[in-house]
Image: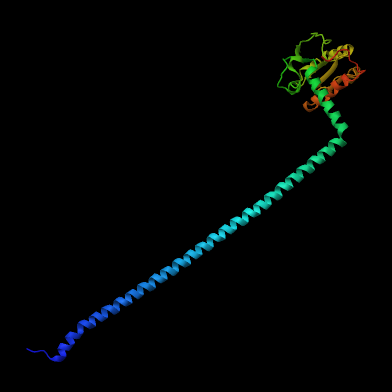
Length: 248
């Protein structure tokens, strides 16, 4: 059977049409891929530029901060040196203006130190041993321990006072309240020997007997002990005071 010429033409033409369509499709795909690649390249360039701008921003910020801190640090060091120089100058001025006062204070501190180190103290208690943890004991603890001689008295007991610089009667516990006459006897003995006398207690001694000894002092409260006793010892150390013993 013979084919119709038109049908034969169509059969011959159809493969060429399919080939043309494939070529066209391939071209479109290639173009699309090129567009996608171009878009990707553009996005990468945009991202790279954004990253570069971000890095430049932080680099600039760091440089600015470093520059600021550098300037602030220099200003701080200058201000510190200036303030220090002003303080030193002020101190020098005060020292120059108060030179004599400073010398007097230093001399007073030295005298006080020597009194603490060298004063020989007879410590009298009554009815119980002397308590180093008591208010009087804490104050006397500032003095050289080897120069402290605690003695517990009994009724009618007598202790020599001539070898001491100070007789300290501790009646903080009130044990001497029933034996104040014994305390007053030691006060008179100390007066006759040129030995300073100090009484601590809530109950007062006879003021007339206290006045018989110009180197007698007292304290009714713990806070008064150190200051009053130190004033008494400084008075004792003055030339012409009623002192027949020497600080050693």
